[in-house]
Structures are given as structure tokens and as C-alpha cells.
Length: 82
Image (cartoon, rainbow, N blue to C red):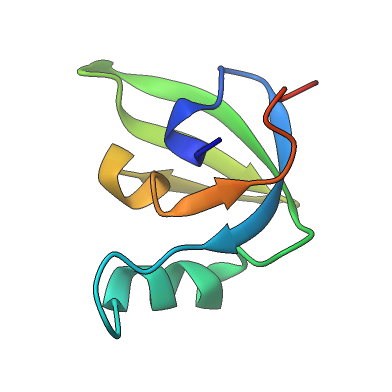
């Protein structure tokens, strides 16, 4: 499952961040921000137009991500239990 597909208020564990191209700067930045294997992530809210941006929380930090950015984050538990 990808972070962009996670249901609202559901939590999951990051498996990896996938590069969409060689040396993907967005994927690298996501890893620098803390989207690393083993971290718990939660989708807090979605924007009103086209469900963008996504408000995502890792630990005590929240990030606003576009759907195409969130799609780079692969989650371990595809059942997305809360």
C-alpha cells in the first residue's frame, strides 16, 4: 500500500521510499524528513479540492504532501489498522 492510498486517521508503518527516477530529489527529501523504514505514519486530513494536499503525521511532526509525493512512500501493513 502507498501512503497516498491510506484511509484518513489510519496508521501504518513505512517500509521504504521509492524513487520514481534515478536520484529522485523528492524521494531523497522525504527520507531526510523522516519517512524511513520502521516509522509510524498517520494520515490526518485531506484537502477540500481533489483531496490535496494530504496532512501526514510522523511522530509529533506534520507535513502537507501532494498525492504524487505521498505515492513514493510504501507502507508495510497494507491493512492500515488504526
